Length: 449
Image (cartoon, rainbow, N blue to C red):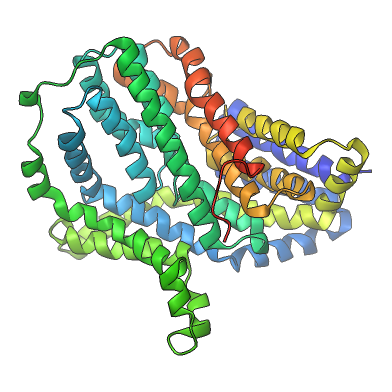
């Protein structure tokens, strides 16, 4: 009897019911789902729970996630993101469809710098570009569709909570640098597709450029905020050190040698971004112990959910592995004998459907381990499987009817949410679902070494 598959189904069901129907916190749902899955271990459950907790606390990703959350909070609080948006607006606003291009690039920049949620991405970028699009001739529905469709870049580009979760679930199957570079490549494809969509919308809807007198001169925005662009070095430096020619040089015994292997992207990227952000915006930092206390107090609520999600995701994967999930999946695949390409299509569709009512992080927490195990057992390269699952889950922002990004975008623009459903499915969900399938099958090139 496939006990592990049944435990996995119960784990997913408990999470979805708790979050979607009961409408409670995702962290609580994760804890309840974990306990429900652990019960299938019978008399071994108490010892297995303790073991899974111990393994979860040893995971680097748990502490890296804490650094990511605080880094994202601080760069937003210090106004660094707003300065980047101002520069992008000045640079792209004069083009036809400039506000939509700014929204696309800003969503990507926020995903790459702050790794925020898709809904938060829609709120942050859309609050600026939504009214701007409408005033420059975009229909309310089209503007809201673009905002909600671009929101997926919050999870499509590294770093993101979803990426950290999948690294934790994949364990030794992948390397952190491999996932980072692979997701960066897949995210670049997503940005390119979205830019092509914008040019299509501009042509189809006959959108005109924004008048020059409505935009801040680039020289002005650059002089006020050029230092904000330095935040990108926090990601560039660790990547250069970990991959490519520079990494090859550093691994030489006469340079750094084996010590190079201790460089962790998911640890150093948030740390460097945090330090650079504090350096370039030091005037906005608190000047008193009370100010620092208030800063940490306001940041604290952001940690609860993501840390709980990640902790119980890793712990649950330990439980399910003990119950024999990998064996159950392999036995099922041997019985069904389904071709790899069809399996990828089915698994991808399943992840996209689950991502409709849940966030990308919650989706991968609930089904990521099972989906990854299934794809790897069928012969899909583990790195490509992880990247493909992240692409599938990134459709969360555009998945009707329950995506929070849709209602944030409609609230900003005054559009009717139901009018966005079909356009979002056609222009944003389907293309990225196909992209995920092509990534998993190795048809779309993704760096794997």
